[in-house]
Length: 414
Image (cartoon, rainbow, N blue to C red):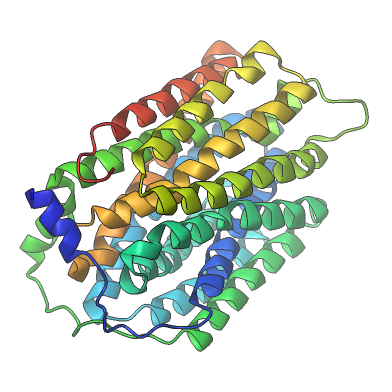
């Protein structure tokens, strides 16, 4: 047995943790509400707000706001995870993060300058990542290893469910941005209240002891010294970077790059594309998670799905049409959904220590938020330099394929 395999065994949740009825459904609801905020604001409301304030420089402005706000997401997620580990509780961080996000979204809906929009979105990203860090830790805390694939599939299903709901709400309130922000904030706060009320904290251990400040950074990054966790981190980062390099600019791609049918506005087009993409994600998330449990195989699902997401990026390059975007959305959704569902199960199996589950999952979530720092800056620079969106699809495809290749290097998971 290798050292990595030993740490995987240690990362199993305690058998004494009581079974909580409805936990899976509550996790789906909590994650869906979070992704409704991310997708509804990031894909529709924020681009519309930026375009209304500064239409001539919308690509560059959105890139700066997206990149700076992702720095806040990257910082707050692991910090909140470590604090959650230290207190031994999750619910206060879940509820506090969601309520603070509601306040941030209310502020964001009432401002009309680029600076204040940037400040507002940074606040929302920071507080939603406090919420996300605690919610993410519930799977390794309370779900047995044998059910991790199924649990991860349900959590992964939150992307198609939450993404569809969020984009639909945002599209329906495209001419009433303040209302859209408030509704999305209320959805997240309501889901957090339900989870905190119906799924009580069951600490598996005493709160972690205080650690001297000089040792915290080394401890925080210690998970990356483990071979399998490191390659899981790299693979996730590459795929997320490729995905958000394109999806983050989808509204502008539909407006400036794709030949839409007459009478179809970009916001309306997103409302039609989203169910296609998210429906495909839902299918691949559930099927991939269940089959990975049944066959006890994770890597093949993660690798093939990442490769599919990469190859799908070529479709809008070959056919920059409405039909091409529909096909791209379906295939990209199939690949990304299966990857995120099964890869989450992989990650829970390579966590170094159960005692640091939320902290280490927070480190992994840097692979979700960190690439979003790079993607907006790089994407806006490429569009500005090359005068089009085709290079974005090419870069996104290459990054996804590299993410698929990274999976091969994980040794302790089949």
